[in-house]
Length: 499
Image (cartoon, rainbow, N blue to C red; front, side, top):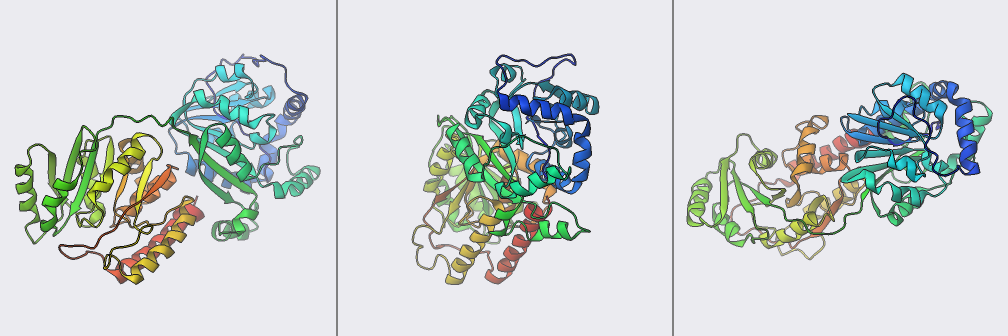
C-alpha cells in the first residue's frame, strides 16, 4: 500500500550539505520531519511489505517519464523511485535528513537535497530546469499546494511534465488501519485531495492538466489474481474511480506568444494525379518558410509525372518529391517526416477531402503553444453528401469514444488524416517507437499513441469534410474496420494493461 513520501529531483549538493532553513518549519512540517527521521531506517522494509504496490507505481511512473531525462523528485525519501526512473540527471528533495542520508548511500549516482520544497531557499538550490518533476504522495504533506506549484515554474521548460501521484481519499481508512497494523509507515494527517482538486490547484498555479489515470484496484498480487484485476478491470470506466492510486500529468501553461516557425506539409499520394495541381495552388503561404513534400507510392495513373510537372511550373514554391520505399500511408508519412526540414510537420491527404485552406489553423495552435499535437476532426460540422458512408460515421463515433478512454484525452476522430506537431516532439515519438513497434499502416495511430505516451497536449480542430472529386478511396470499410478493432486491443494492452 502507499507508504512512501516521494520528492522532486533536485540539483547536486555536497555530502555535508545541511538544510537551508530560510524560514522556520510549520508545526505540521516539524512532525513530518521527526516522523521521517525516526522511521528512515525502516522505510525500505515498509516498502518491501508492499512490493506489489510499489512495483506497479514505479512501473507506471517510468512509463510516463522515459529514461534519460533530467528529473526532479519532490519527497524522494530514500531515493528508490528516482533511481527507477533512470534519469541522466536526477535530483531528489526531502525534508528528512535521515532519509536523504540513506538515499545518498543507496544511490550515489544521484543528487539529493535536504530541505522544505515550500521554502524559496530550497528552490533556489535546485539546478533546473528539468524535463520532468515528480511529486508522489508528497502533495499530501504540503501546507500550500498552490504556492508550491507556482514556485516550480523557474524549474520548468515549456516541455516539462509535472507528474503528481497520490492516493484515493476513499482509501484513507484502509491506509490508517495499515499504519496501526504496522504494514505502512506512519504519516501525519494528510491533505484529502481528489484528482479534480489537484487539477484545480494546478490551474490556479498556471499549469495545464494534460491527462489523468487511475490504477491499482487491488494493491496486492494475491497469487496473480490482483495483478490480473489491476491490468484488465481496474482501468475500466467507473471502476477506475475506486482505485487506490491516481496520476495527473500537467505542463506549464504557455504564454500564448506566437513563434516564427518553418513548416513542412507532407502529402502522401497514390493515384492522385488529378489533385496535385490543386494541392499546390490551394495550400496557403501561412508562414515565411514553407515546404511541400510529396511522397508518391507507386501510382498507375501518372501521379509522379504530374508532381514533376507542377513542381517545374511553380518555381516560387518550395516543392520536394520522393518515391515511397515501402507500402501504406504510414510508411509514406514516416518517409516524408524524415526528409522534411520544417519546425512544424503537417500531414495533408492528397484526396483534398480536407481543404488545404484549413492548415493555417493547425499551424497557429502550434506556433502559440496552445497545443502540441493537433488533430483534425470531421465529425463536428455537417458532412458533404457522399463524403462519408453512414456505417463509417457510426464506426468513427464508436471508436472515438473508445480511444478517448484509452488515451485519456478527448479524440472525436482518430482517422482524420490531417495532423500537425512540432518536429522536436515527432523526434521523441520516433525515438520511442520501439515500445509500440511497426504496427500501423495508416500512420495515424503511430502518431496518436506516441503523443499519448509523451502526454502531449492534444487539440482537435473541426474541419469541413468534402467528397472526393478524383480517383477512388484506398480505405476498405470492413478490412480497415477490423484493423481498427485490433488497434483498440493493441492500445488497451500497451497503454492500460502493460504499463
